[in-house]
Length: 91
Image (cartoon, rainbow, N blue to C red; front, side):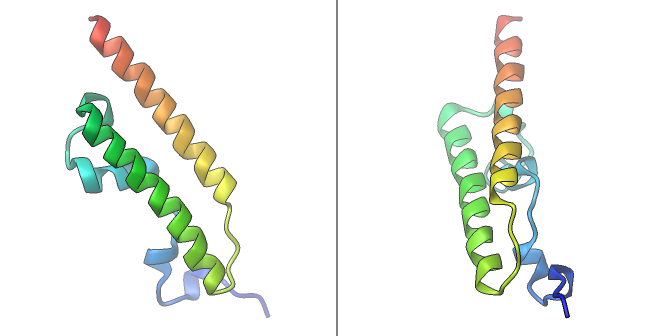
């Protein structure tokens, strides 16, 4: 019998979320590219905590976790946000 993470009662807490969605917990409606440096740092820290905390929580209940994939997606998101911010500051 294989377990599906979607059957777990804490699935919303265990599910991987897009980095942009997690960043809104810190930034609200402000896009990451327009945020002040300390707020951006707090948003990135929140994303990292969500990834590592989610991995620990999934492992605790015996579910697989693609932590490397989540980190790679978060890094790509941060890189793209940096490119957008740099393009915006040149205008």
